[in-house]
Length: 442
Image (cartoon, rainbow, N blue to C red; front, side, top):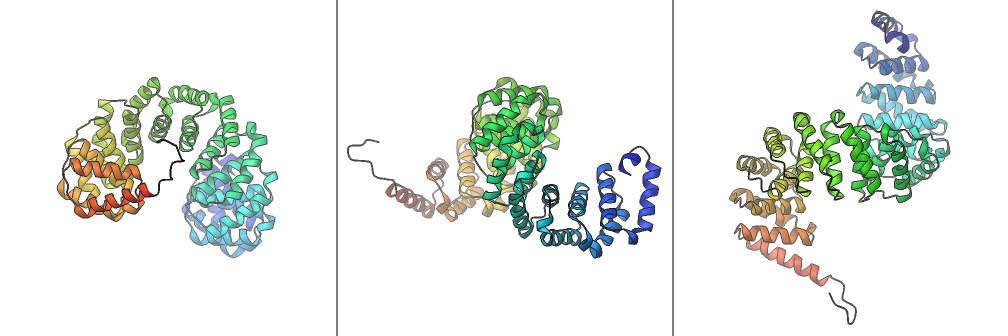
């Protein structure tokens, strides 16, 4: 069906109509194969999908493990959010856990992640089944399972240890996207598995001509998130990113810039290429892409007035979608670059005020530092910041305390409770410092 109908739309539509008419005769394999064909064609026929789901519910107990995995994968590929259907798949998968093969486990986990369905009891069961059968997992199974559990934020250290152990001997067989997904998943949970990182880097270098923009940016992001600086790998990523720059979307560009800046790689040709490509892509950038790009250029002192002008204009249009970290990163970047965009700063203050309770201590510290650095004394906003700093002071580290104290002092904000609280917190930190050994020196 899928292979024939790809070039024959009338045939596809006729088969769809016939399937709907005879849906009550469909068994598990019929439902699974029809859904798979639709997914392979990316053909979303709502009446057909609804009929398949309706027929699947009373017959789900007769599905074999492959039917369960393929049908779940198909619905997720078509982004069909059908909670009763997915709940039935989940229940049957848990009941048939010992019968699931690696591909079935991977497909069900991937489907749940794709549909943002964080079913933790199901993932617990799938993790146990995956560890039990890990020796039979192929590169695609390993990478997709890691990606799925990371996407739904399912922390399971034994599963990641098993995935790492199984991946190492066959890492050269991983396709570029599989390497990228594996690296991303481990970094997402801050699992700094050095043997695996070295193996991924070696495999990526061997396949660097086949890595696309997303693969390159994901691997760079993973290394930067884990604080691992590998010069040969980043030289190759830079060359590949420049060669593929016209294929890069705004997230690829922002993540690549963020990664190189985080690891202190000063790569002028790459940043020039990212700047030019970003100017063409800013309208499609997410708030995180916008602010990460600004942050990356500010950190590396890559003053780029056209890019910051464009980011400023796009940010003002999108401020309603910003979260506290976006506000903080953008304000901080403007201050570092001495980019005194008064309308944007006023807009940031206005947009940030209603969400002040969501600002953490670092957000407060860096935002007031930015305002102080640029001499922006917005009294109502600063009063709100002072109240939030006081409320979140228990989270503060030494850098937060010093930035906050310096900033409010520069801006002449005199909040006695806050100043006393900062003093008290600083004194506690000093008392908690370990004593120097006898005869030691600072």
